[in-house]
Image: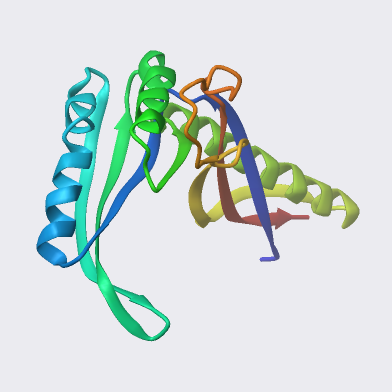
Length: 201
């Protein structure tokens, strides 16, 4: 029995409903103890912000290291890195503005996501299978045959979620972030499949 193998792809778009931010606060000191003490003072005003409803701290990472200048040790440096998940987009603009006012070494994001992508993935998968069927029907018609039943179906690649807008990077002292367009962005959910069909005379 003759067969035809086709690959299908499908995608759909949804408006994101949560975002991730990455923030790093860094200070220097004459030694490690002084650097850590200064870092404690720096993040003392930051920690209450992270208790805002709709903001989840995904991780905190402390790094303490020697500071080198011209191949010589010149004091120490301490950093606190945060990964934040914002589950309420309404609080994002105020959160970013207040984080910027706290003078982070860097602030990156938002990276927009879907909190539940199951329905979107399901739709993308249906479109991928329909695409594979259309391709198979075209090949069958070109051969003067009829498309038979589906014999095998394999996931053609890991389902992916990607944002249309790239993550932004903020390194500024201003707390006015109203013009940065921090509204939820569209997210593309994609699926691919490989289908094997029977060809009938």
